[in-house]
Length: 360
Image 1 (cartoon, one colour):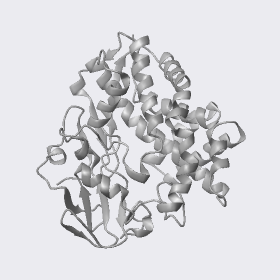
Image 2 (spheres, rainbow, N blue to C red):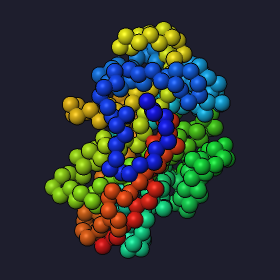
Image 3 (cartoon, rainbow, N blue to C red):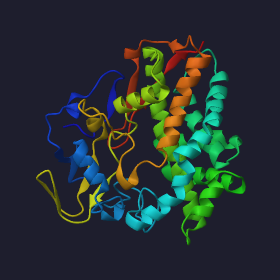
């Protein structure tokens, strides 16, 4: 199965090999970095895996050299929400969670709607929204909430593009520097600095803030394209923004898989024997495509459930709401079937190559 192949297909096309229910609950395939990876495709088993303390995020447990395999540094080298496990992860998550809780996000709903309204108002009548808007909008929201002066949005956007296409070391350093600008102002950046566990260094705080910016921009950028395209093509009518957004995310999850996880001991999944240091992924796209299930795994599950899920949902709902209220005649400039999305493959998601629209 072509689990890690690059993506290049129309927005309405599906990959029958990925969404087929014929494969078992766990499939074993060749990993991009060599050796085997076990991919979980069953929703119930996926939730068990995502909560199992023997299956960890720390790249130190990987069978590959983390640097050569393109992984984050180990938890010992770079403690972060995406590398820590167990009690240390729980402690760091408790520092983040109140800042992005449902209540805190709801309290900022008007602020996010205003950002969407202003950025759309600044655009020409005919515009490709993937050229800049889908990058600029989530970054503007994030920097505003973090307390980073919005004069740094262009700088952050350039760094995000560089991180995906060029020199990741330079890009990470640039985004960390942008994030640090928020520490001198009132906002979530300063609050997070004051909430992190004792002994957290300034550099570690910078990396935590970088992670929030990059993860929040990368996934929301991709999701915005799919959400706006379907909103303009389908005219969801009486459907609430919340229901509509969740339906689009189910069809087009921002990441096809969860991030890498690794077994710390031999274990068995659905009859498959996994040695220690086995890579494990949950196939979010396959789980979400199961028509028999009402729930989904777009934002993961278990201790590592996406801490920014509520903010991402708000950003997407806000754009749909503003398009409905301010641009009732907005439409795609090309047929929906002509839109294409591409991605590098692996665990990274895809985004629309272009989204030409008419705003009226």
